[in-house]
Amino acid sequence: MSAVIEEVDVAVVGVGTMGAMALWRLSRMRRPDGSPVRALGIEQFGGVHSHGAFSGESRLFRAAAKEGRLFTPALLESRDAWTELGRLSGRPLLLPSGVLSVAPSGHPDVAATRAAIDDHALPFRELDAEQLRREYPQFHVEDDDAGLLDVLGGALRPEAAVYTAVEQALAGGARVRHNTTVTAIDPADDTVTIVTTDGVVRAGRVIVTAGAWTAQLLPELSDLMVVTLYGLSWFIPRDIAAFMPDRFPGFMRDLGGVHAFGAPSIDGYSVKVSPHLDAEGLELGHPATVDEAPRELSRAQLRWMGERAREMFPSLDAEPVRWSVHPDAETRDHRPVIDTLADGRIVVASGMSGNGFKLAPAYGRMAAELAVQGASAGVHEEFSLAHHRRSAAG
Ligand SMILES: Cc1cc2nc3c(=O)[nH]c(=O)nc-3n(C[C@H](O)[C@H](O)[C@H](O)COP(=O)(O)OP(=O)(O)OC[C@H]3O[C@@H](n4cnc5c(N)ncnc54)[C@H](O)[C@@H]3O)c2cc1C
Image 1 (cartoon, rainbow, N blue to C red):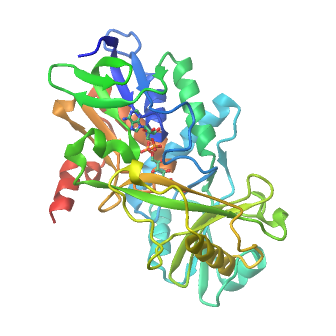
Image 2 (image 1 turned 135 degrees about the horizontal axis):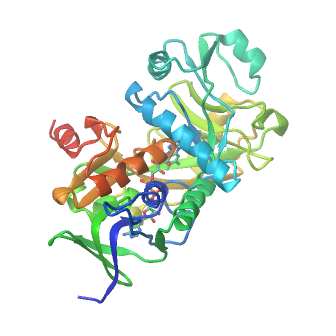
Image 3 (image 1 turned 120 degrees about the horizontal axis):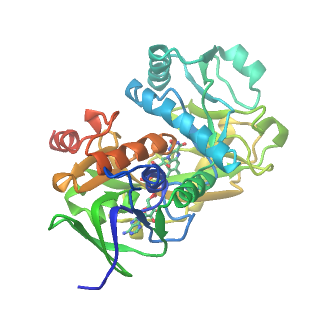
């Protein structure tokens, strides 16, 4: 076995979205004797990279999640943390543009969002087709469309957010080894042995936040999550001023059976509109591993995305001015996995299913507390391995 290069209390494997947030939380935690928790992040790439689930300029923050009202407390906690991180660093991480859902009246996703709003008395606005046309002329609106504005929503800056969380973690005493790949995790004795390309790290606990790579490191999870791919696309509108954050919200649009999401212009010349590639023959599919995932979109996929984007926003040029493909880990019911293995020595926070960025501060706290305290408030039963195993069996 290679030489032991580090001994720490908690190692975080994968310093992307969840890993950066877990490390930030760990850097504020204490051991029972009052001394700081010795925390080390291990990341296969450099600081902020474009290979994982977090890159692509913006991520939507929704305070009211269509995925279910059980997420609202963690979303509100995360919103406070995004604001705190932005204040600490001087980088605005959450653009408070609101998030507007536009869909045919009675659409189940909008009904679920409305239920989350009602449950927690969140601020909102409902708009009928006429109001939508008047206030948001960027959208093509059908007569039976309705709008729901999540007032606390907005657009997050994911690269700046990951950078900031790591920066704050380092300032708090945590350390990170970049360009270091973990090849094995062995909880055989009372610590955990983490084999890396630089040597062995011994840790009391390990938090695995390896995103779409998680099942490669922990094969026992391979039945519970698959690699899934998402395409992003940006388009040039005739009048960019109408798509800037002061006039254009983050949005989710359902039109003609196609779902799309996007954010206001950040670069000042293009706007992100990403129709979900689920038309027959154009799906991105589920590669066995991230290494086998295509990182390009075909001409047919780009044309389809452009045509759908232009149907939704008629002033866009239908040629995507840029695009990208990103991997995430997806569970069967799109609930995350936040739980422990090996008598608590391994904590897993993965399977974010295209939905995790906005929740990362809360999930990072949960992972850090599971590692240091053995328990954490807010970890829902639906996040447990037992739940996911039942879901896989049934
Ligand atoms: C295109 C796209 C759009 C999305 N839009 C939204 C949105 O609008 N709102 C929202 O809330 N969520 C959204 N999501 C989901 C969200 O971005 C992801 O759920 C979240 O970023 C996943 O975080 P993660 O930490 O699990 O993975 P990642 O951020 O990918 O982090 C995993 C890290 O682990 C590292 N790693 C992996 N294996 C190893 C190893 N062996 N050794 C060392 N390091 C390793 C990787 O390099 C990476 O840095 C979107 C996702 C995608 C892909």
